[in-house]
Image (cartoon, rainbow, N blue to C red; front, side, top):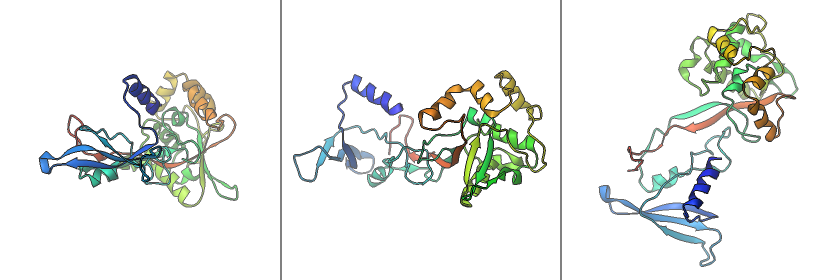
Length: 280
């Protein structure tokens, strides 16, 4: 959607679009503080003027807006073939920053419909379980959370504490769920959200009870008129479009569980810029 809107704006401004063209190198001149961009070398698949399909695009200002390095990880919510321009920037001597800082969180697999499972998907508090290749199911979160109240409240908070955060592993917080999901996938098991059933008991064996949750969870559900039996009913009340979104991409949350995993979602670093978005 973002790409579509930006493309429409570019066409409205009569900015020429070079379709089927991929920039591969930034051209510069000068040294040190006097160094500046002169253009890019690109591969134009439609070019018939030379056998190498190479073109030079001259410019004095260059905007790198290619997205992050989505191919770094197998499990990712980046679109397929999202390679970024960080390598090209490095070759040109542009300073990068915070490349070690990446963001991870739960979402549906890239091979299906890559989407972050944040917001109401988790605030509906679906049942979470894993399954091995023989079809055996595991209530694996019971080995991580001592009480069902803690477990259900952590699932709820994952909706607005979506990215993994090390401090939120403490005191049985929401990011402990990320660790649990990751460890299950490392065992070769698939992990699912089931909106047709309530969360299973934690280590204390207590059954899930809407009235036995942390105060902030109950208050939120009350304010949204979502103190309803069954996760699907809660999700339908809070955000029916969340169900429709997956239906549009081939999965019906009202009929079957949703497979998910721990995905790379965002690179918090990248090209270093000043307050005017200018590079080195």
